[in-house]
Image 1 (cartoon, helix red, strand yellow):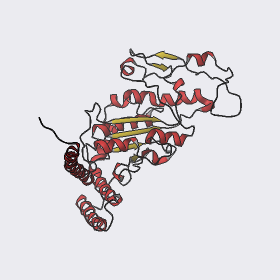
Image 2 (cartoon, one colour; image 1 turned 135 degrees about the vertical axis):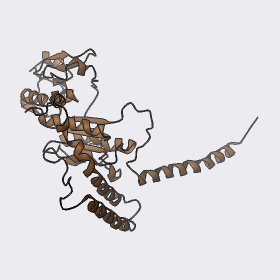
Image 3 (cartoon, rainbow, N blue to C red; image 1 turned 45 degrees about the vertical axis):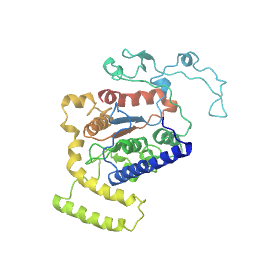
Image 4 (spheres, rainbow, N blue to C red; image 1 turned 180 degrees about the vertical axis):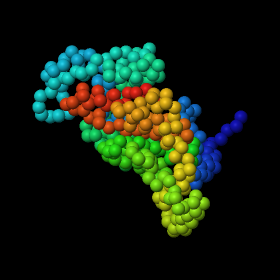
Length: 344
């Protein structure tokens, strides 16, 4: 029978830590040399890509997917419950909308959802009612939702997904963000890389005109000339990089961004050209319809991006902070996103 002392056992275990540490260091080196390379998942994945639709301003849960019959019964009754505001009278206010069951899985929706309530769509939905906020202020709440920190500055959810899994297409950004003309409250902090390397920052596509500036090579410059210019610029940057700390990855990210921008010039024009879709598909997303065209095009583009290997796409839809005009505001906003969501 084999026996050993506790001291020898600890010594043996300690000796085995060297190869483990070396393996981790080598993996970290590989990560730095190709930060967006496809990464093996820690667990068997059920999903490969994410499209996240974020309704900025906060659709009322009791006005969309979470009916409160007791609240309706006590409508306009004065409330003695503690609230977020110290002064003034407080009243219970029921939802102005009715509710109905949609599909066969028990989910309930307000009566303003037309396309999303179709059983073919509703049966694929999962309604989670356990989400809570820790702040009444919009920027802090957005930071909390997108980065996990109310103060902002931490990596966004898309940055974490990209960091963990890499990208499936090195010619396109791994993490893409689409907004309306006005940025969401808190701005680009909502898709920041935080303390992760700069490679994992979200890339915003503009809502009007060309989604990306300078997408086309100037007419007087041939692609081969553009390629040589990038190569020479990379050499200069690499020379400067040798004078910097190995921990400073900002210039490395800048070099990688120039390379990505050059590759995108050849691939992304076809990806963002939604007009190549069939008339039936455009209609399904509400494209060219006054109320749904803008959000419909974004949803359709999101689908095309993930089909071409983009890992994480986030779309912000604003205007949901309805306050005193809740019925009019929510009715209008639901109409603008209902059909595109169902199409997606």
